[in-house]
Length: 443
Image (cartoon, rainbow, N blue to C red; front, side, top):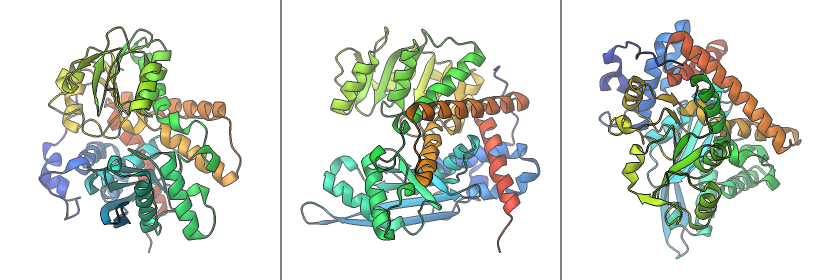
């Protein structure tokens, strides 16, 4: 797809005063953070919403925001308090859906934005969910297994009044996994007095989890990357790939690209950054990360400075770590032809504009990493029916949905001469606001 010039826009619509009209009073207008970035994205799509634009403020206000205290007994007998959040951004199209992250830097602004991006993501792939997200401000690396379990169970009890299989379904996110979901499911079930497997997704298979769920987000990243490459004439075989973050998303995506003939030349994570022009041995690197928790110390590669990651010569870059990684400070240095956002919100609007002007194709998070929630939907459906599909069936359904969703977004992008991010927001916001319009207001 040819890269059209940036669409004209009214600069005043992105001024802090305009953005903060949609912000709760407790957020700092001088540092809008992830929520402010999301608001800018909504403002950019508003001119394309037609008559549905009358409902656009629905997208700028989370439906429900819950802040909870999470006190636990530590192993030494002392009591520690952690702050937890659960935000339900929109439920016009179905129950809330979104992960729970445990991280020492979690903020309300971040969780609000992540919940809103989940609304967009779910609508973009047309699964019948709204958007939600949760988090606890805690460094799980500082907790024992027992302390982690107690934090998880107390948090689940605190948010239990707003989650449920038909209300809001949590899932794994940063620093949470199948075991955390098992504790959440058990806690909710104990409080309800009945086993409720559908209250979370991303569970162990033995507790109603779905085959293929762990690899689903990375597989979705790979799928949309292949589809985009076909449209711009890029041969995946022989292409150079740089990956930031090497967990379930970046690691799986890197493995699939390597299996398709690409060379994964650089990987950065919290432990450091490594590089090998001839291509890294991805299975060996994944085994190393599984053993040690980081790419640091991998013998078959050169160590480079973390900031040098943005200068690595590559064809495809996959930011699969945290938000706001690609900014106006480093966007001009990126040499990739294509960026596939495995993480949520890794690119700021200012960086988006720089990349757009330079002709770099950005496959936005709200379509590129939707494979995880798509298979979460499959898991939820299987739990309700108590009938489970094979992994081959899961992967086939995932690829089919991701290909169809991406084709629809590409068509809208070409029709309106806009970026893929704006096109994805056009598709998703119209679906959300059409549901809002049909349902009306009660009372």
